[in-house]
Image (cartoon, rainbow, N blue to C red; front, side):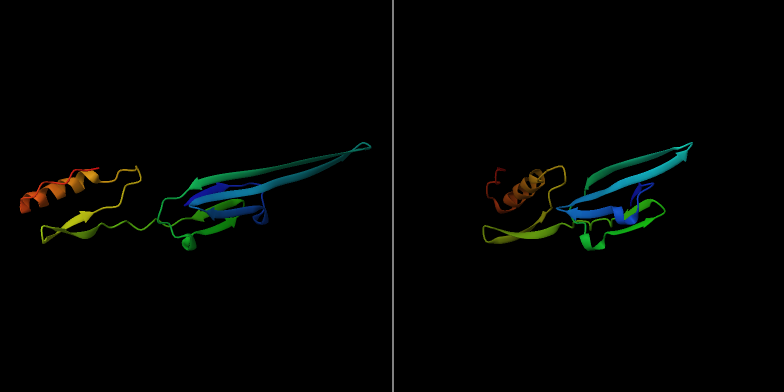
Length: 135
């Protein structure tokens, strides 16, 4: 959940947008005050805009994001992305089929090649073939 305190901002002055996994909250704030005393009138006006962006993780369903605005507080509910599950890929080596677990790359950019080459080396040892070299 994302919560933003926006005192003095109306619901019509706030926008919540999602574009390419980037959630952006933007809006405008404005106020005016008037003071009359002893033959003079003083009017103060202040205006300003704001914008904050937050990158969402892969797998978040944009249709499930909900926002509410009450008494100057914006709450945006973002559901957790579904866990990525590994899937099995069959590899044919020398006419024999063995299964190797394939996993998706982590957010840190790792490709999991070390685990795959270890599995390929084990499969190659079972068939008597040379293990494949990682690129």
